[in-house]
Length: 74
Image (cartoon, rainbow, N blue to C red; front, side, top):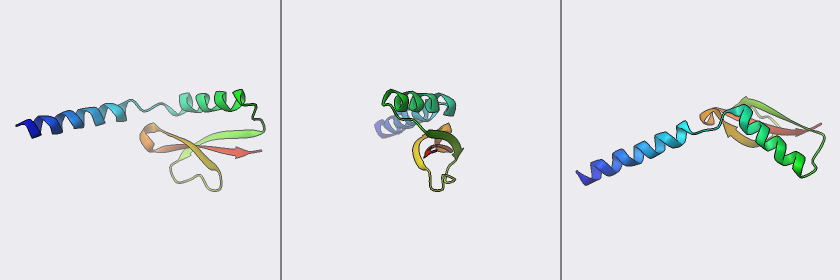
C-alpha cells in the first residue's frame, strides 16, 4: 500500500512539472532579455519544432519539450 501511494505521489509531481512548462514566447522573451543585459547584439531567436534547429544553437526548450528556441548570429 505504501509503495502504491509513493508511486501516485511521484506521478502527481511529474505531471505538475510537465504542466508548469513555460510558453515559448515567454521563455524567448526571458532569453532575449538576458542576452541584451550581457550586451549581445546581432542575433536572432526563433521558435522551431524539436529537431529542426539545423546549424543554429538550441538555447531553450518549451511547449512541453515539443519546441526549441534557437540562437543564430546575423
